[in-house]
Length: 323
Image (cartoon, rainbow, N blue to C red; front, side):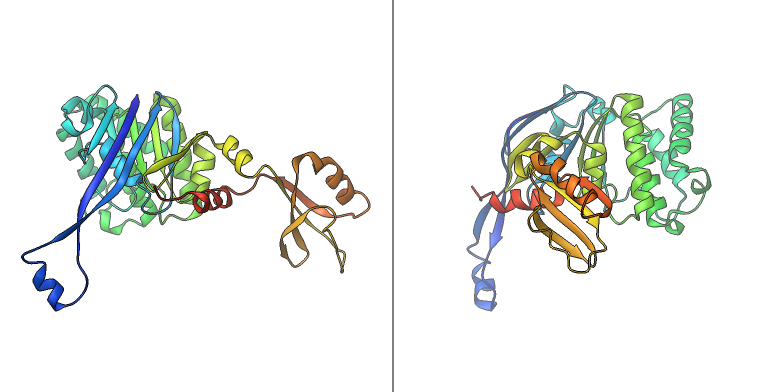
């Protein structure tokens, strides 16, 4: 469905020191620097996969999505999305994909979403019967009924994001590029958007490539993740496998009533908040440690978890070096 081989996207950026003399000099002689936003990226995504595309700010995530959606021409390498070369922007390609960017809006500010939807139907030449069926489905999944006739400017951020998703999916795309789709949303709305993306993926066997700084989005939606840093892929594989590879130890959290507790013999104390402790414990030691905690030590509210994905990625980015 998506095949990328040795993709690179480089930009020439004008550089000059501050000051009037430098500004005058740049009028006749400019110094340029090549910025390698993406540098030799390769991966394949099959139909129906939900893949997280992660990396720090400036790693090349959005640039890659823009190349995949045809907004940018690659400097080198080959890209194939649903059998098309994206930058050629063929009609059938545009009908097959959608790009949702959490900080961009396609809704018309002073008109209700229903007007934008009607315009999109005309642009994509969607048959009226199919359009009505799709809109009814999206309205039900996203609970859009009360929002369709309200001017966009009167919608909350969460309501607007739901309407944006519907607008991006009315033409029935089978490949979804989602760039920070839950940015700025409250917890309840983030859950609603995640549930919708999962349901749409399962109903239509659509391919989803998701970028997000909210790790809950990735954990809930993406069994596989691709991690990019400094324009290069540093991991491509199973999410749980990455966590186990980077930090195989478990986190054991519990509450104690002991006024002078000492748990250092059971594991490394990672965090303490009042009487609530979090220990780092080797997986093989979990049964013995839990036996001690629930037995002689009589702790309560015990939980065993994997390391947070945020911590794993932070360590990974810290170890990655620029090319």
